[in-house]
View 1 (cartoon, rainbow, N blue to C red):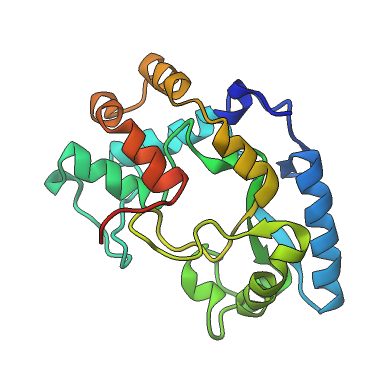
View 2 (cartoon, helix red, strand yellow; view 1 turned 90 degrees about the vertical axis):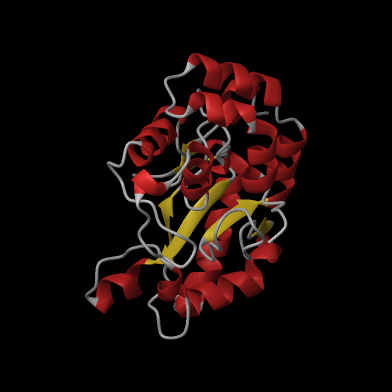
Length: 226
């Protein structure tokens, strides 16, 4: 079973290869492959575009966004002006689209982002992992419809299916429910506090001041008053 260091993304010993680029926990890998095979029979090319992510990788994303090296966007996709945001505003702007290091579900090996590789390549447009690609006539729309209808048969669910005041809606994010819920029950907030205190995360004091709220609102997607 996954240990606390693995839950925080400091150790990848709990995951195994799914393909050349992606890794998941063994039971999640098996469930994904079964779902992928079933999707293939329906003419859908179910592939992973993001799976396990280490603490250091997530930290790099966070720090680059905090420093303005990567853009920040509003819920509506509008570019935000970094200089106009307080530290608290900046935290929420980052976490709308990117997880806090140590509190990302992608550390767990239970979660991944999916897409229809064949249809994306046939579209002739760069893949951006945005909602439009999973709706109406988007290249991943047919796959998203099928996955949303069939994910539960393979033990998966969509933790960010709806925006409830936490993470923006992610119709591409799947989680292996049984294992993810077990991890969530054993999530160690005190360890996360220690790890972030010892890290070089940007905005550290502001993050630590509201850390329990951030885990509830974004990792667990329990939201807040809208």
